[in-house]
Image (cartoon, rainbow, N blue to C red; front, side, top):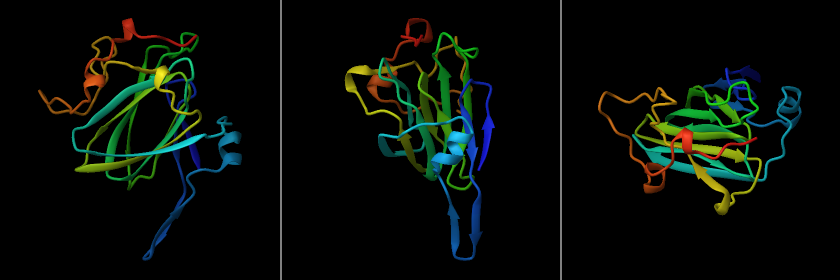
Length: 182
């Protein structure tokens, strides 16, 4: 596995080795020893799977105070995956990073606790899997506005295109009004 650092502290893109032939492919998606050696020493508590159609934007989500780290990947389709650093003590506080995750490129994204996370579906549909380092806690759920001009996230939308959002995501606060981590 190749662990690629990003401009955001602790956020990594993971490129697993993929072994393929005429029968298909094989790849390891989680190996605790390799992740720990790369600085991601985490125990996962929960696995999630979502399916969404083209144009759906889920996020930007986080939990506070019971933060979750997320190891995300796509097993069908393609998404533009985004994290925003909400850790005041981080050198990348207030910055965002995005990467395309697809079933074909096999990339994964490690979003450590303390960042908001969301994705936009680029294909007809996408199956998105993510491992969480903490349990879902409805009372701790928070959101961040996807189109906050202060963040200026470069979502790959056509001019004038609006994503499909949940009512909760459409009403999420701006970065200036969000709750932050220490």
